[in-house]
Image (cartoon, rainbow, N blue to C red; front, top):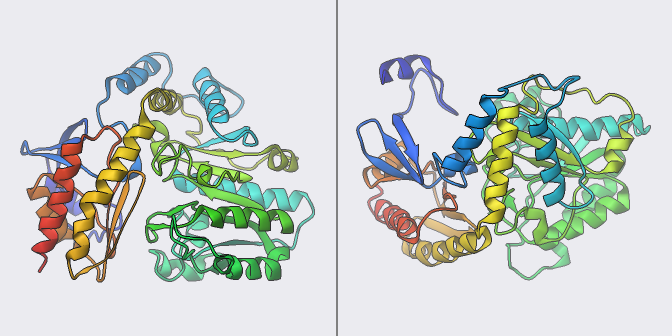
Length: 419
């Protein structure tokens, strides 16, 4: 593998091409393991950024791709349709809340957020709400790296401050402070309620990640917050968008995170685990109020929208998930992570440990030396990619208890050696 070419010419996510960080060459992957070019096998504790919930090289998902590619790898969705898109659309309508019965297929999580924001904006425009030109969201949120998505990411601690002068300016409130499982108090929603009351005539929609804030801070918060927000949005007739690109398909212990509160948004964004990590695909679902309110052409149409290969493997992935004991698996992962990561709290550099579903987070008091930490973890046979002061894991659902223990023990021993 020509790593010299990679180093000099290939840009990796969030890196400096002139001074690139070290990368590890992967030759193949199977189950929960990545096999490096030198033959070492490392457990992927990240599910390739939340996506590979079934692990790698799964024969059933492989077969779905093989069968589809022999028929049709791609066809434009403009003016044409195909069975993989129809059957996947039916499945998504079946497994989500009853109100969410309209599906728009996009080609990445960021594009799903863009499409959702455009849906809401076009709905307001075509219903005479011409003064509405802002979105309301939380600090510490993350929704993607395209311009619309960046504009509703955390404006200060996020990754996009260098582009702030180019972004539309939206409205922010502090991220929820009511921890998941903590006793609810009405004061937790006061700042949000005040902002919505004062500015609702300007607000196109409220958009945020339900229950779990992802790359912006790995914050877990109370389902009661969703209930309160939904009531306020209905009171002020403001649309509600949930970004479940990271949390969808079982990761939090519910099939979708909004189910923790039994609250249904007007628009729902899905992605990442949608295809089991095989291909890029996302979906934006909305209710009939939004769909009928957009009474002219919705002006969005990615070239690879509803790609047949991606739709077919997504359908196979969802069916595999639903027929598996995924709830028990995620609950078992949660229980083990809570037990085994707790030892990290004895370390002076650790601020907090939190776990929800198949997500484990160690929040450090200071930023993590990512390259050093990764190198030490790889030496112990584990792949983790920290971010800022967060060491977080979200393993494939197929992971075995002894593999989880290997991850947690490796984290603990590595942190003890931290310079």
